[in-house]
Length: 270
Image 1 (cartoon, rainbow, N blue to C red):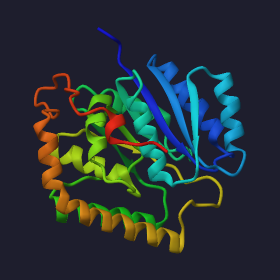
Image 2: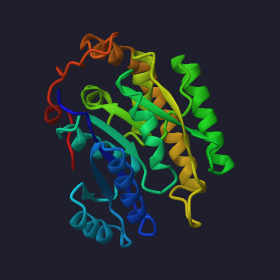
Image 3: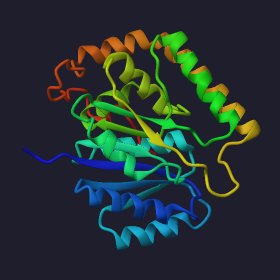
């Protein structure tokens, strides 16, 4: 039987201060755990030295590579990374962020749960973000419960593990232009699998004094995301039925079927 392997998708924008540390820390942790892995950074139009650092790192480490795109936002970078990852031979895909707010050592907790469900999620323990972001997360959890009747502790967490075949099935059912596609993938997983493992993970304060979304920008992003959720609410029954008809949500952990039309026919990468 082929050994399980994982491809890490890490979007990055202007992280010159910590990107090398993040890459080395993740590589060291997965190597020490003897896990077959590759790290794929999606450079979302960084304007600092991030791309130059990634170029050097990818030359020095065979298991690290990157793709650069024009700045299109975190959500588009995540989706781009997922699409590329689904085209790989790795049978698991893990997504995290590049801001050094998570601990690579927690990965093994999710990895050990992979046989129980095709999606495993982290949950930020003692989240080290500001009050506004915590309130947004609380509101999101309540909104999803009220509309979709499912309790997702941390719907947008960038610390999640997917079986590749499962993610490949779900991607074509994401609407275009989503600000936070991870939220919608969480809803699909929790509604249709019904038994997604959730693992407590450490969370650290962001180093430095900058945040990528602040004040008016953060408010606009929240409005956009909540409106996209309202639209998705009315589309969800039909989309869920279509997904269920593919029989990808097996009840006994059998190998997930991969019968969705090819990604190239459903998704476009700029």
